[in-house]
Image (cartoon, rainbow, N blue to C red):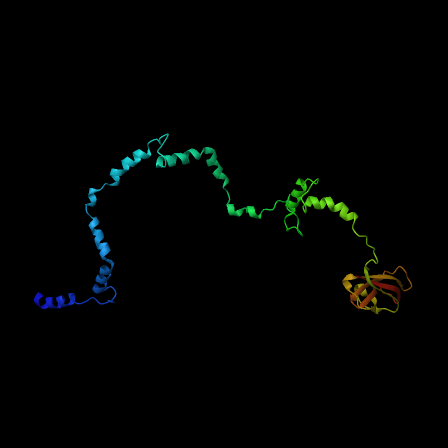
Length: 262
């Protein structure tokens, strides 16, 4: 009965709420509400001193706002009024200026900063020009008046070029660099070895090491006493010269020369 239950309920309701109640328990819910409902917030309820329905609705306000927005702006509106601010902006924003907005087709930061620009017509050269700056150099040459160029500019350097060339110290060529690294020659005579193809008959000669990529072989000889036999010569490796003939000959006599270029 209620007489049985009430004393227990009264006892629980008159017990202090734990400092850390179980999550989502009645104690925890009551504590959260009570902690959030501060005295300052409680006092704000005093501002509810009239029914909300007694205030103007959007239906009450909209017609008046629409009427004012659809009214012509005065020719001489009050200084600093909304009308005056709008008139100033609208008068300055002409159709011609509006069209200029179409020119904003790239971000400003994608272009060269003014502080980074160097006028090629007046900037003195210092060392080698930056790669890709050929256009600026050509433009400077086209624009520079050589009668009184800026000191250190391209024009100044061009003006002094003839004098610099004329006054350059003379030099004597003491020796021309050699284009030949080595020349080896010898005479080959004897019965050739047998092979196949181009090397049907051949003789090999051991020579001093050369760079095969920079060497040529010169031959002057005959086979079987016949000067019309076409002997061939080639380097098998850096130290072996082969003299050969593709026909069957029994002997060859040949002056060979190996020229190695530097």
